[in-house]
Amino acid sequence: MVNPDALWDKGCKNSGLIGETFRCCATRYHETQQQLRTDQGNLCAYCEQDLLSGTNGILDDCRIEHFHPKSRRKLGEVNWGLNWANLLVVCCGGNQRKVVDPENRFDTRPENYSCDVLKGDKILDTIVFNPLNLPDINIWKFYRSTGLIDVDESICTARGLDVKMARQTVKELNLNSPRIMRARKAILDNLNSRITERLKSGETVEEARRVLAASVLRKNRAGDWPSFFSTTRFYLGQQAEQILVHPL
Image (cartoon, rainbow, N blue to C red; front, side):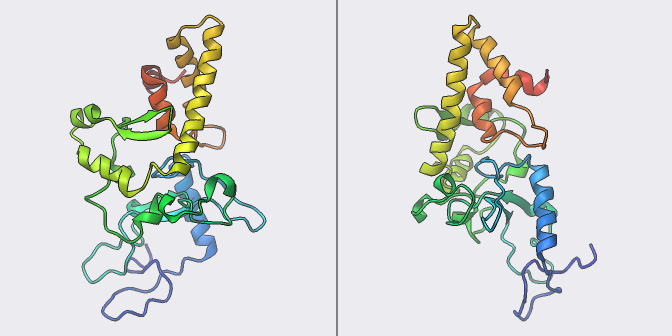
């Protein structure tokens, strides 16, 4: 890094702080955002909703998030603003009126905002899970009747993960916002309908789940994972796990 002590924000005026200001121009921001989208398979790091791009003045439902607040640091502290391991890409959390697909992506009620919106500048490093540090297992469970996300306590316990921290993750990020629950329920209802159709053709539930898992639990040509990946993974059960370990 040319300026390892630089700051992310523009126009730092606080005395006692170190480093030149990192001027994150539109080009730099876009390049960073695109790389993060590629790294995350184009899913929000918190709710796993797909990240949509806007056109003709419509905002992307996507922005860069610093897991640990990028607040200006003092001498000797980690440079959270430019630490690549501290960067995530997330959806806008429902608070942008001019975002793409506002009927589904915008909410008029602040209490229904989610992801980084409610997190704000709070330091939650020991309160919520950092998505980058979670093991490659599904620690969540979902309910098709509502689209609600819950914690799979047995898996958390077996893997040595803090159940309380998992619950705090859902609460602090408001992952059961009505807007997100509706979107999850739509995914679950679609999967259920597709399984039902395959059962009518004579397949067993296991066969239907295996076929669907092979079809949907993979990246598309653009390198994107399916929206609400963990939701689909949970609903397709053991067949999903088998496909993820041994893709067809």
